[in-house]
Length: 213
Ligand SMILES: C[S@@+](CC[C@H](N)C(=O)[O-])C[C@H]1O[C@@H](n2cnc3c(N)ncnc32)[C@H](O)[C@@H]1O
Image (cartoon, rainbow, N blue to C red; front, side, top):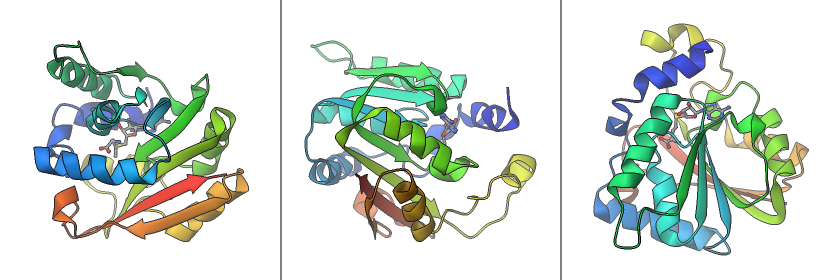
């Protein structure tokens, strides 16, 4: 297990206390409504990269996507599976599958992609973008939500964080270039900061990228 995987595993138990992972019903509805507007369709196979405890994967299942949430942390995936089971309704559990999987090793083909606060955690987002490119349909849209904040690696992140060039958040123009280099030539981004209905009203900057070919 790498230090980074161990880091996220260690945080899995309390991860739902982090901002944006304990959405109120109103905040969940606001996210769904915004996401439904950003993707061209609300069906097909959606990949949630670095899904954590599955907060957003479950929203996509409610929107109508067939969701595959992947994360390298066993702890995160265990929590995500528990959460999905707890949401079982009369029709059974939500249409979401969770796998302990490094996103570099995905297979199959997806119609849509989502990631939230994942790209800053990888040393080489270009490598990941190339893999996403190989495993998506031509018309796939990737929505990446990323945060920029003022801080240095500390606490149990001191060692691992020092090796992450994206710590503190990637500049949007840097990510735009990375996406373009790997075939995703159309990227728009906008701030979703200070929107209490989306649980982003804090001191950080929250950016939503819409990425396509
Ligand atoms: C900051 S957390 C974000 C979790 C969740 N997406 C959210 O919105 O709260 C980053 C997650 O990405 C996962 N991760 C990092 N690198 C990964 C990789 N190569 N493949 C799959 N998951 C990865 C970590 O285990 C962690 O759960």
